Image 1 (cartoon, rainbow, N blue to C red):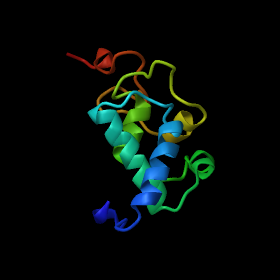
Image 2: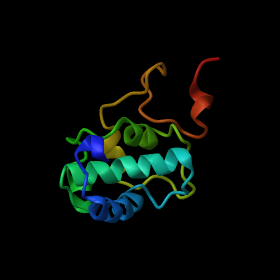
Image 3: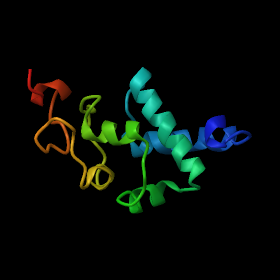
Length: 115
């Protein structure tokens, strides 16, 4: 947080973590998914965004790489799927390197990669 200039804004980051969790689909928290949630929370605070603004402006925001990769399926597919329209807006125009133009993984992330 301090590297992002958020020192002294811990209360705001905690509230944004709850918003980030909702935006990501209330995912199970393990190390990679909790990092994605924390990255999005800090992004929300650093950019002074509301939860609705994240959805509305998603196509033009410069999200952290971890958030983009989450929505592309790098961590797998959440049990209840990805929240829309946020996912479609975040990955719009983006492709996954080395996949012949895939914008998101379907199923297990490594299943679409060449051996």
